[in-house]
Length: 389
Image (cartoon, rainbow, N blue to C red; front, side):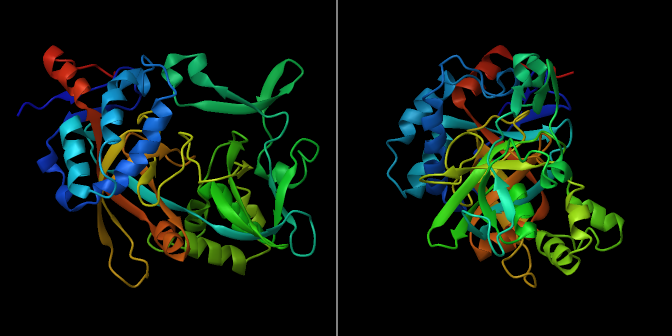
């Protein structure tokens, strides 16, 4: 079999895709591809709203929307829950490409989940921490509209006269800097849980008066994201081996005086919206699927692309050994900390199991993009090899 190196144009830091065979995907025949097919169907529904000639990814790394039309139509004919049929569908319609960061195929994989909080629609009693709706004066700028090589990047700010200036950072917003612009969506009883909700991007709030509100990402203040675990490691509070969502949460709870200062080192601040219906909703605008959706850096990886992952994941209980994670997922979300050609964040769903696994997942791995055969045929027919430098 001929192997082709596909180097998309104008992709910084060197995304390289190496064609492989399905037989090269470890554990491929043991996976439940029918579960991924359902997630892929949601992405197809999104593709149906886009123009045929719309390119997917930086310089069309995943071709155009038109390249996906026939595969999306064929996906609708596969019986639900039929793993062999779903597996054959992907083998027949797609070609796998291993992603590299230049010459390195290895990257970091983490997890996220949908947390549960307690809250109230009015500020009262223990409910003193607001989850803000998107402010009226927040302006988000898609940089691809100004420079093609900035696709997948955006900034946020507000107008000061005729100038766009940076939006206030977390510390300033919490201190009330945006009280006139940002309206509370709901009030929760725990500032630490609210902090982690900002990181996860969506969650469920059990309301004091009964009922439940689902909230999801609406916008960010555009300030840089910082993983506060790094600061706790720098201080000697924990090590790279012991740092996790669980250990960070425990330290913040045990040190209430120091906790706000540490949390404010992460200048990024998320604004929320109420979610109605299925959720949570990823950056592609579709409902995420538990253990089958992944957040990626869309500067490199287009949303909607199926991705075969080979990594490991923590067991639910911390004293158990890690487990192999060989699984087909779909790129359907993004995240402030997800940066690079080989980097992913797996959505583990809702509940204690999801939190335990996602909170401790920080494992090396590799992944393979499944691209429609129409793209592979063009590469093979033309010898297409596009220099990224």
